Each structure stands twice: as C-alpha cells, then as structure tokens.
Amino acid sequence: MAKRKKTVKTNDHTTTNGVAAPEGFEEVFGARVAGWFLREAGNVLQGILRESFEVKSRFTRESDGKKLKRVYKVEVTAPGCLIEKTDAEGAVEAQLGELVGLDESGWLKRLGAVEPGREVWISCDGKDTPSDDYPQGAWRFRVLAKKGSGGTNPVTGEARR
Image (tube, rainbow, N blue to C red; front, side, top):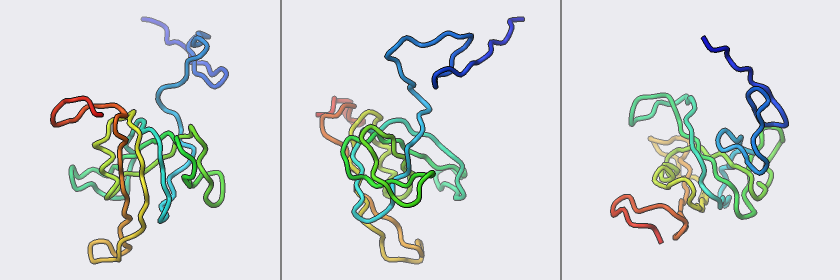
C-alpha cells in the first residue's frame, strides 16, 4: 500500500512533499471573497463573473426542495462597488481585482444564464413594496452581460459578439 503524502503549507501555497509551483502561477479555485455585495439602492458591481458554489441555506429551493443557495464570485473591474467585509464595520469600496460574493436570489437568478468569464454589470435598484408573498419587500436588480465578452449563445450555439 502506498504511503500517504503529507501536505505542507509554504508561502500561502499548498504543496505536497515540498514540491512548489513554478513562479507566475496562481490559485485557480477556492479564492476567498473580499466581501459581500451591499444590497443598497444605487450600488453597482461591474466585473468578470468567476466561479459559483452552493452553501447551506435556511430556505428551501422550490426547484429541487434542497436547502442550498448559490453564491457567485465577481472580480471587480470598475470602482464604486460597496461591499460588507466580515472583518470591518460598515460598508467599504471594493478594490479593483478583488472578488465580491453575491447570493443568488430573485432577480439575481439571471446570473445563472451567464457563462463564467463574461463581464457583468449588476445594479441594485432598491426594494419592491411589501406584499403578501414578500412581506419585507423583494430586492430588485438589473443584470447585464457585456457584448463580445465571450461565450456562446445557448440557443443558436453562435459566438457572442
């Protein structure tokens, strides 16, 4: 039976038995978000949609009955986005290149139709008036993907322009 290799932490990169990655390479998955998009009317996030993942949720999804929610990571490409950091009080402006976390809910489910790697522009337009379905009022968002930022049309299979 082969002996299990020991994982060692060196210079913020995990390596096995001291084997380090060549210079110039960076982590592909698992990068942490710098903060979470602040749901506030007028807040805008422009950036490149990166990976998404699922986490436990207190609510049950209607589509499959699971208590999970999807979280998207967006790499900031334009200044002005306000985020909430877990280690700071109040809102701060996200820095260019930072990853911002965004929970999928309601209007933000549109992000599921966008391929990772495309540039997106997301605007929080405020809350709807409370209703029987949403007593607290649902947040409204505009979600746009930049033309020509890659991917293919899922219907026609043609390259996006």
